[in-house]
Amino acid sequence: MRALARTRTDLRTPQTALIRTRLTTTLVAFVALLGLGLGGFALTRDGGSAALAASSNPATPGSFTGYGFDQCLAPTQSKMDAWLDNSPFLSVGIYISGNSRACRSQPNLTPTWVSTQLAKGWRLLPITLGPQASCQPRFPRYNDDPTINPDPASWWSKAKAQGTLEAERAVTAAQGLGIVPGSTLFYDLEGFDLSNTNCRESALRFVHAWTGRLHELGYVSGFYSSASSGIKMVDDARVNHPGTFNLPDVLWVARWDGQANTSVDSSYLRSTGWTGGSRVKQYQGGHDETWGGTTINIDRNFLNVGGGSRAATETHCGGVTVDFPDYPQLSPGTSSPEVRALKCLLREQGMTGLRLNDYFGTGLRTAMRTWQSRNGFTPTDKWLRGHWTALLARGGSGWQKQGSSGASVWRLQRALNAKKIDAPVSGVFDYATTNAVKSYQSARSMPTTGVVTPDTWKVLLAGK
Image 1: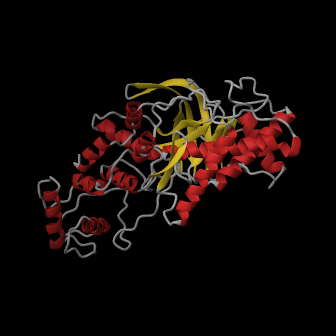
Image 2: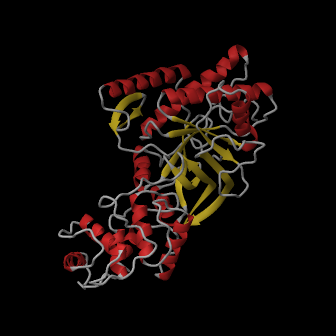
Image 3: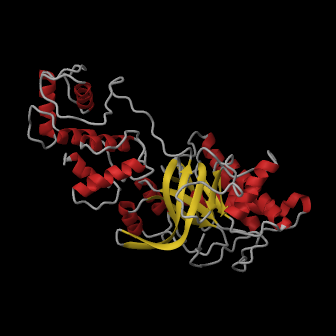
């Protein structure tokens, strides 16, 4: 990963930081005992004092399969919004702690920034860049960022103490930003000489302690490193010393092969390790990208985390099928499964007097005309594709792009099928859905981004 800026030194001693963090942890536990729970709260620090602040933020990144980027300095809100509307990315790496990070000053990174991105659908990847491997020649970077202590005494106890402390500092920073327990915090260990025994073994104990302490504090352990050094180190430990070390839950592999997937050469990371949605791959290094007229210098990533993007199964009217590859025009007197689906969907929109069968009769005609009138259409006895599109899109909202999942994606895919644009209905915004959205946008002279914005929903809800 890259770093671009420098700011003031954190003057707290490790002992003071440890005491403060443990007091914070005790307060969190006390809140939980009161029945308030952790999911609705975050701890913030002002001048070293902990304060309880309400937070409704979700754990991040959650379950997700899609594109991400990381950049040293957290982008401004205007840049984030431009990229949300136009780019393929839906996750962003942010440096939240660590004395060895270059971006110590993060003027944009506030609790409001974090909650705003999460509310809009961004998945955040919080990063700590603290003590680095003792044989990494580019560190220490300043006069207050010691490297990992390579002393092998007492099973590298000094390195483990550093890993524990860094985890506690990361949790304090995360809670101050409203990044709630259950979120994944990533440790950035830059590439180093894997053949240096004490350097490697101390780094492994550091990661072991980092992971164990994060688990104790209710967070998921993430680990970023180059495929040939840190990643190979933890995978070798998994295979050669099973059960000996606390290993990270999620690996973020730096492997600049240009391939947007989570595959890695098995000589570095075996295919049996971190499977089932526990990987991120940084597949392209620093470069400029421009989306929506806004340029940011980024690394590119592909994520498959939390088991990957998935959507809960939807049930309508006790089991009525509403998913079809096509939604044809319907007329009075006809019978079909699509008629039953229409009745069900109109029921869900508050229309009454509908019997759930396949026949298009008087009751459906009345309900249909009422719905058309209420939603800006000229009432007619025929149910047209534009009506289908508007009805199926109702309830969809927000920004949806590759990796999104859930109710709005179900609605989007059905609405696209009503326009005879093939979008397999799964509730997960996949590559096929991206192409379907681009086809829809292109046919309507809209920006062909493959991203569904609130403006796109307006067009869909108008039946156009």
